[in-house]
Length: 540
Image (tube, rainbow, N blue to C red; front, side, top):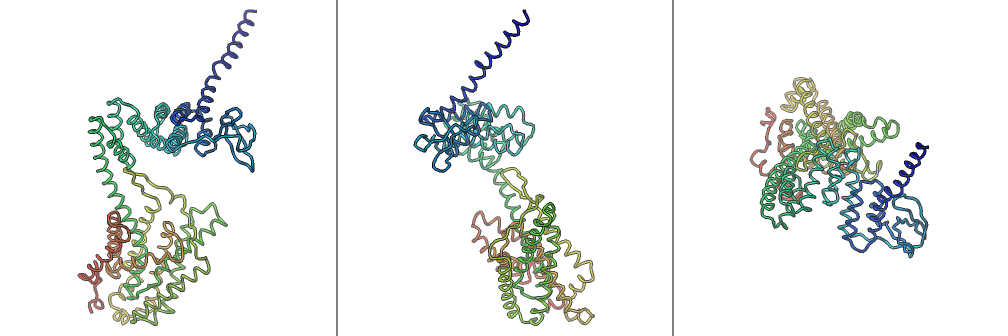
């Protein structure tokens, strides 16, 4: 009897607890949701912060609906609902349970209004609700959203997230968001100084902007002094990382110019042929990559990541065979007539462009990046190093190294260098100069095709792809020294870095003009470029 009485009391207590303890929590959320429909934006912001502080995933659809303009109040009972228009009526759902609660005409509901400040708070709140997500990328994104919104209501969630966080990069983002909120939400000088100290350890454009805004409004002399010093240090570090970023961009541009120019250096250096169709051979390599990727997508989608390993030799063969055909069919009849060669190859470039337009169409074609080339490395100071650019830099140096080995360590390379230095003497020694010309032109064209594979990963593949790099390629070859691989390497990277360091100050167009003027002045002093080839034919 005693046990039965005790059991009844326990059950009664649990029931009472369920109805009188748990509902207030739900009621609190309901009250905050109802407060969103009020007229005061200040009250709405407070309600959003309270909803976010609960950490409840159920409030996410409510805030998302408010952000997207789908939160309404039903005029009949002032209930806050999510309304979606379907035909002539609006279907209503409960924002917490997401269950349908009816359908009404537009005149029976009233939209919950939001201004830009409220939207910013909502975005920060939504970010805060994913601070505890198991997905690292989502946690970083959430911390960045909270940093931008600087909503004081996010402090409890941030503290909870910091207690659990093990990833140092994510912890840094969380601490940054926490410091930004405390800097603007508290009046305690020591706490604000500590916040500035935390912010000073993160040299990013966002922190620089934050401290700049603080200095424009701050009245506390201690905080102003510390913030000013922190801002100066951040600007110095950002300038340094900006220079590193420009250096990387210059090397990246130089690697692209190197790939585009090295084939031209070979053909121009050996035969003295001004090949205006060189850019179209680069384009053929890019379209070969497109065709290979389409075949992989159709017949072997699981092997798409390996498509570039097939595209590189395929592009070399396609462009190389086109090059041999051009040399045998056109150029060999025009040796010693540079103007006619220039005009013939220019006309050929137009023919190749129209051929590609006829087969593939005039619009850009999509060439995807393999998964191992996608993504980036985010360094300090907001510096982003993309994987595709890094791989292209390495690839261009590898191509140059292989070409150098071919020229230095093979019989073909020896014969090609002999023809370069003295064609008549090479011919008198039994070297078939015509065959060497054809193979050399094919080699240079093949390398241009390989350049097209690389360019397809960072540029649009279109019939005009090669035209953008033709003039730059000639400038690299002339500046570095005709036919000299080392000169091509130095010339490509020098022009790439010179261009990128000028762009922030002069603009992209003026930077190119200044580079061209500098090369013209340089050629006036050194007509053979940085590293001129030597030989009897050259000397004469």
